[in-house]
Image 1 (cartoon, one colour):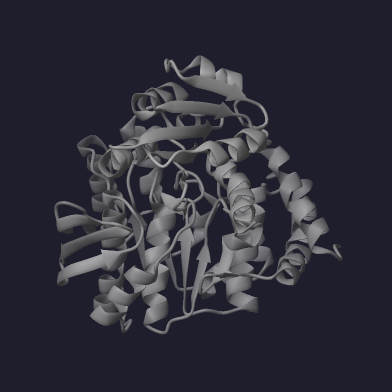
Image 2 (spheres, helix red, strand yellow):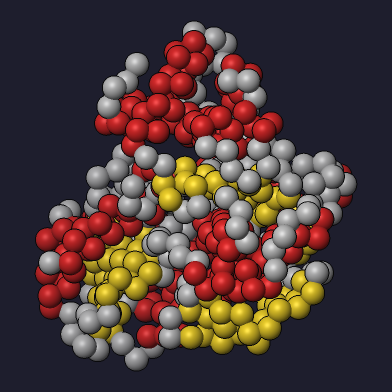
Amino acid sequence: MFVTYEEALEWIHSRLRLGIKPGLKRMEVMMNMLGHPEKDLKTVHVGGTNGKGSTVTYLRSILQEANYSVGTFTSPYIEHFNERISVDGIPISDREIMELVNVIYPLAVELEDSEWGGPTEFEVITAMSMYYFSKVRPVDVVIYEVGLGGRFDSTNIISPLLSIITNIGLDHTNILGETHEKIAFEKAGIIKRNTPIITGVSQQDALNVIEKQANEMEAQLFRLIHDIVVYDHSSLPRGESFSLKTPWGKMENLAISMIGYHQTENAALAISAARYLTVECSFNIGEAEIRKGLESSYWPGRFEILNDKPEIIIDGAHNEEGITVLVNELKNRYGDKKIHIMFAALKDKKLDKMIEQLDEIAYKIMFVSFDFPRAARAAELSDLSQSENKRAFEDWQTVLNQEIVELGLDEILVVTGSLYFISTIKPHLCKFFKK
């Protein structure tokens, strides 16, 4: 058993060696051993390629404004591991992490010698969260973010009040498939019988898959653009303004503090979820709570402006769709500036199309390496770039510090790529500007 947080965390991370092991059997066995804590929970399930974290945040904030206690399970973290299991936006304590690991560890040891094998890191953390929200810190509702895919994701043992699929993009194609349809099939695996589904999927081929699965499961489907419509959008200096039509009524002149048109769509899904919970599940969420919840929502590492002079932006655009959104927003807001980009990524991503888009807007582009098992080397990234003003660096800290000092008034620095990289670099930048 573990007596320190550091020991517990080290054991959790040691499960990474097991990689990804699709299937729900290990989770089902662990839940049985724990007395099925997942059955005690009222949950909302959120899957998709991009936008899951933001959608979770909007919905959590709305529910909090309505005086509900809200658990969230998200990944990956940006600044601190404990963020992954939070109550009302506050990460659980180091002591609680240690105590949860001591509950799960004996089960993991027992499973090692079983036909199913030991649980992965993500399965361990998921099991910890379900035990925590059921036995240690009961809450009114828990919002579960899918880790990978959906059909075989370890969170898919829950029976939610409703499910949300944000969008579909070509990410994790080596596991989920090479086409929108194949990926949509995996994401649609979270659709449960007679459980409503709200979706932001826009590609018709992917939406066809969602619609087919919803029909087979007799799950009522609410679709962005078709049933949920964002209109009267305008960009604000530090956010977005928009109006919304849903099957449960209209709301006009809404405001969010997260930047980008895509964030209005994520917010629309969360608002629709809140409306559904009110009308169909006896939650008490008014328009005032929705407005306050939206305005106070904050999700780190998503087009986050860390500093104004010089202007520094971090954005966890870790796939082609995310880069497209980032590039469009930079063109919209900073077309008159020289854009310096620092980029790091995981080598199992489709990097060529991502870098091609960044080349298009970058006055200067810097590729860097960072300490993570699946991280691509700076030179490998640079080889994919056609920019005439590109450089590759192994030491991101030195070049980042120098870049900030030398940045001109007509220039901005955008640090983007892997969320794991953003989680590494944000604490460094916060410390730098604090000094």
